[in-house]
Image (cartoon, rainbow, N blue to C red; front, top):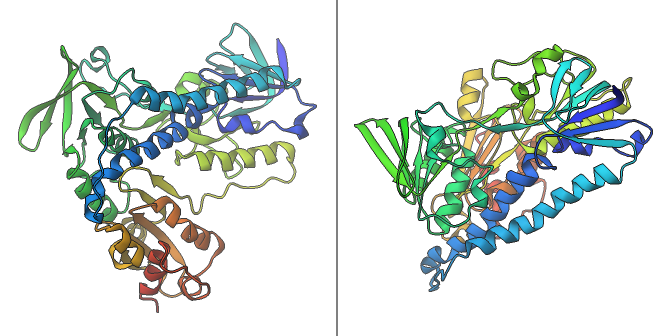
Length: 457
């Protein structure tokens, strides 16, 4: 039985851990799917490439209000799809080849790994190995709901929807979170009739309430949004799929050419038999880790979606850097910093957030003040004729320290960055607003004016 100094399960952010300082370590990397993990292959990178294309396709529809006649002539789905994966697939294969054939101290096993005990792993290739240290970075997978007949109906998840052979005329999306919202934007911009099915009364309900309400209002002008629906059964039809639901007005159904299931993701701990390693889990299946990314077995570390409650690539990358340092410096370990984790939804409109929502601040009994600023109130907002976007800030009224920031509108994911920086480095609202120049008439004036509107003590 072969023994390794380090075993890494998963080739997303975990693949960044081995470096030149580990050149004398014997390392095994285990991967059950495509090399490179979720973000590269079926997550943030290809989806944002689709989103950017969708933004271009949607632009002509908004040109009339600016005095420009523009129209969309055609959407060539195969070219869109192949441009994106023609770039991504070679990167994934190149990464696999580099680790497998150009790293003398690294052995790649391609199979579904399972723990036998705390130091022993079945690689899924017919070979069992042991290790001194193990990093679990095996990510998550789409959750499939328990709906009658759904498995035999035929459906897609975010893993497969981007590789469709042809663009459907209609798409029903089961889900109301960020994955559902982003794909609704993509496919509707390409001319697909989109229906969204939500169990709750809001889309993006984990966002600040005012943000979620605004997004839901805008979404209902573009898509067929069905709120407070419980999906009972799925049915295959001659042309696609039919969902049977119970809603506020009783039984109803919806039909479409394709079905996208986007209700969330679950950690892959069950596939790995992590419990056999004596690793403690949260109730939702995530691996429990401390601030150093160590599990209940001190020689086993975990990072990313399999352990974090932030299913975000930038969080996984941060945790991978922490794990790398702590493996190399066991007597001088560093902690992960999850104080101010930002997130964005690349739909239309965009949403970006960091810190507390107003509802969370209330629930925690934290004293706060809030201020909002509309895109429509700044000069660049006038230029864009934006009428729905706004920024909302929460701050400590005594110190001016920002507690949360939430933006819905054009380029929200970029506009929010100075607020993330201010929170991370302790810059108070007054100093941030008055201690620097703000380019006029640029979009960040939205942030400047929101800061000035905070009713601080």
